Amino acid sequence: MADTVIARKPGEGDAFWMLGGLYEVKAAGSETNGALTIMEMTIPVGGGPPSHTHPGGESVYVLDGTIRFHIGQETVEGGPGSFFYIPEGTWENFEPTSTARVLVIYNPGGMDEFFAEIGERAPAHQPPSAAPTDLSMLIAAADRYGMRMRDLT
Image (cartoon, rainbow, N blue to C red; front, side, top):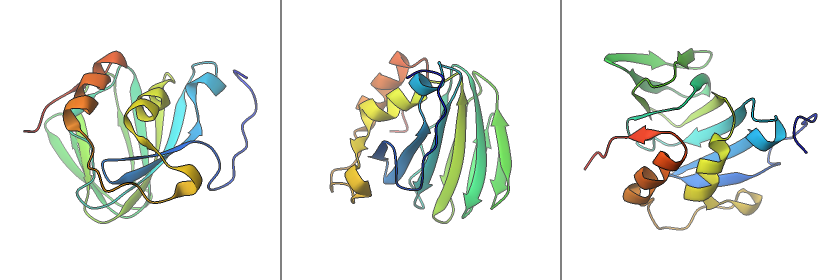
């Protein structure tokens, strides 16, 4: 099924709960012949990821809400319509300052496998369990996907 046409309506495709947010796969790396992964993320205030790097580029487009993006040594605020590109190996993280919905494109693809491993599957987009994300497990898994993460504890 690699490198085929993908047409998904809202609520279709794999989705995962992680760090209090819903991470929806719009296009998986396995569907794009490894070219890219596209995710839509709905993340509450305080639900952003720890500081990390990626083995490829990451593009983030803010659809709704507001975020504070920490990219390298810079901090940039963004709202609907804001766009960020983060090159490979750049330390970054963002924190929603209101519930935010963002479209994220990872190049090359495959990052969806990280979310599938770490996240809690969200069948029919049902609410997550009450258990918080195990950050030590998240940090350990990141390495398998070429990411580096800083432990915030």
